[in-house]
Length: 287
Image 1 (tube, rainbow, N blue to C red):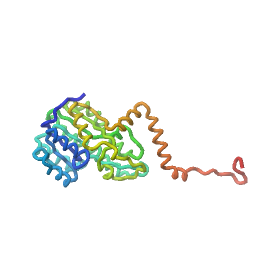
Image 2: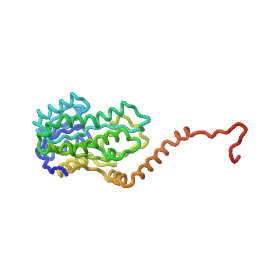
Image 3: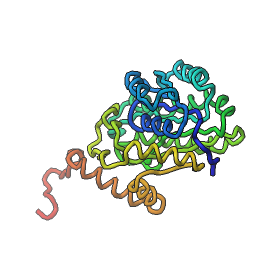
Image 4: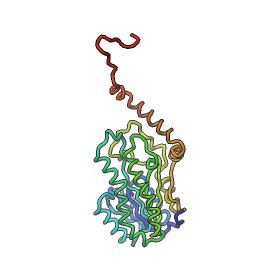
């Protein structure tokens, strides 16, 4: 278990804060009395957030792309200037794509990893000295249920979240010497615009995000886990059920996934099926 903490008065940076889970995390943090630096590529949406009455005096905004070294430096300077330091780094910015690996491109894979893994990793590296000086400091990495069990047509996104999960597990032990905790929050289906903002949407089966948790529920669960000193939370009942089955009977998920792919690509498989050839003068068996 990590440290329990009262979030009131703590200083936090939230990336990907203009909409969805990131925006909900900012609003939830402000309700808890935290001072927040909200970062996103979409400055107009950040400005709307800053104009809310609850944000005045406790929220600073900065336009930044976590994949840019210059922007990561800008975030470091903004945290020092606006907050006087940092206690909680929330790596929430993320992007996705659906489709099969055979139909994808190297560029899409690299864009996903730059945003979902390298950006958070290097932002964490940049903020370590500042966090080490903070009060009960913590890093919160927003992962995914798909970062613990991959599914077809979500492989690129899953791979990036698996990488973030692995780094988080290592850092949880490594950063003990600095007194920094590491929490991973793994949402399942969430009611956001995430699906609309994907780099590619080539998956044949669409996941119904409207049946998932709200962004506000994810944010409350995440900050509640941070208060209680949790190391990891896995969200939504279907998400937890998937991980439970994967723990004890992963072959069941593999079997279901293969069957589904065969059904979806039945026509393509039929075209590639080898034909039966007969020697001249012979006849098919049983003719």
